[in-house]
Image (cartoon, rainbow, N blue to C red; front, side, top):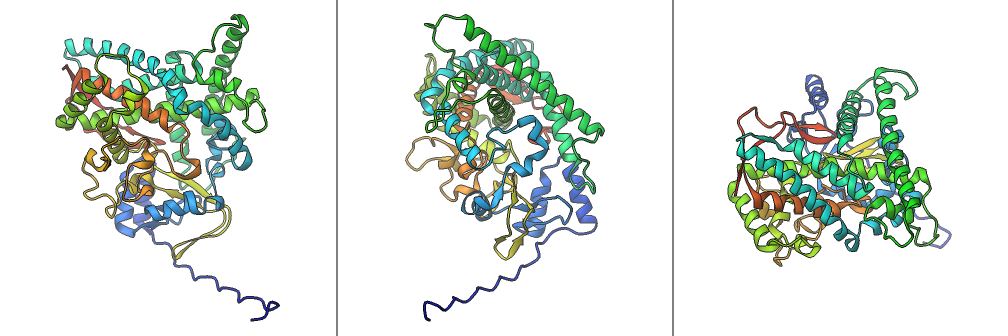
Length: 475
């Protein structure tokens, strides 16, 4: 072939229709999504395979295989948008890390990531330990009175207190009820849009839009109030006093490593709201589901308690000690496999994409369904069984992060996402969860309390419908 001869144009691969439910089965699937039932992912996977389309306007194509997760989150990540899929949360989260795209996202992550790196994390441990001890005092009182504790509520409250102090330098426990309303109402508003034939613009004063505006204004008042109080304290204190160990102070002082630019007030607000909303609910529920599983597997709980006693002793926990809690971390990883705080990773194709024999059109949404990827039987034998040994390291060393745990297939495990957009707070979340779980199991036996079955529900975060009541007894 001469240099002037154009190479043959490859023919476009024929596209195979994406399988999915039809008729009554489709209506049943939509009803399951609207009732927040995560089991719908498993049922659809078993019935239709690794990729499923519901054939409804704005309903995403569901992806259940790690290879698809790798393609969407890493190999062809540039052809998928994250921010567009979360447009309903734009007013709340602004242009924080979760929704930012392109150069803006890169600059923000480059500024924020060092503030959540290992050298910074140890300064947060005393707060986590103190707050956990305060909660355990209440637990001892409940144990003496033989009263069950609703540990999902307790863990959310503890994680929210930790997040407030770590991120903002304040105890925001008094705001928890308001923020809880925000997350619950936001989830219900989002799910009511699922499969809807018509979506009202945000400016139309529908009941849901009015609720969203009120909730957004509440968050603004809370975060800007914290920011104002922090800056007033900074102006009043002596120049020789050290900065308080909270992320807000560090973000205000942070500079882009290349440009030297500081964040403006709105950007600081967006980053703090994003980190706050993405941290306490996920960490709290990871701990609650871990305790739910330990209450039903006392032999595993005893092993976690023995490790905590051996590694931590009576000293204040250090970063090195917490990272040495090998088995405790295995338990956390297995709990997040079975009950991932975030059930899926949503993306929108910015151009046509071929996923195996199937074609995703430009503008079409896909959902990497972590809940079912974590249960894919080709990668997780006996997937419904609780087995922390799945995450045992061949070297005997604890996995540093979730990204190094599953040696079979990294994209089969996605509690913190994967690829460039993986959660920037992963190390902090694992540090906090391991420190809290070690303290709890060293202090208490936990057993299921009488009551209704524990039913998980998909309210953006995977939550228990009836809570998780546990009976406590001191070790």
